[in-house]
Length: 295
Image (cartoon, rainbow, N blue to C red; front, side):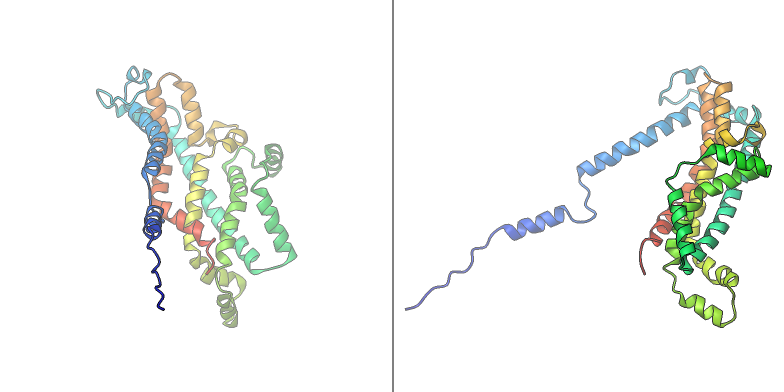
């Protein structure tokens, strides 16, 4: 008696699975994704185009805020921005403030992160925890004003630099610590065998290796310091120390209904930040991810 073995019936499950995998493979973007990206882009691009186009209109044409190009492009609006008020001084103040905040923050935060990452103790752990808590704690202006008054720095650019550095110190130290912890300690031990101290180890060996995260810190700090408005408003009572965001606030008060001049001043204020971010955006992404991936 012979028995026949029936071969299993082929099902269409495998092709369906393959099609589903192809449909939902990583990197696949459907029509809904493109539509959402288009809507998000429109939300950011349309207001920017409105400001750019309006900045080249005449006073009469700017009364109507639309995306219609001007009949004659008025480049004189930008000349008037620089010749009216103290825009040049505000621009110089912003440059001095931004570069100072970047230089002090990178130096202080990288050195502090080196100590925290390489010296495991209760003191360093407590300091690091305190810094992390400072990221979510609200900034207290009244104590800060009192401290600056006692130091004789209230209403000065150095005092404003100290406050901006203190505000950004927790986050910058955090990204530095995450990166330094990935560096092998064998580098430190080999340098000590050759007679190097901690300071020389940091500046000769560790700091050059921090280039990716330092590039990220520079872009973030420049963007923050250039756009800072609240600290300038509370800590700089004299307009001699105002920066570009405060110039927009002041310029809008002087030319309330001349939207062409106000938009031109906005472009002058945000153009340096846009250039810095476009040039350094790849360093921001790589630097932020560098401290999150274990070697």
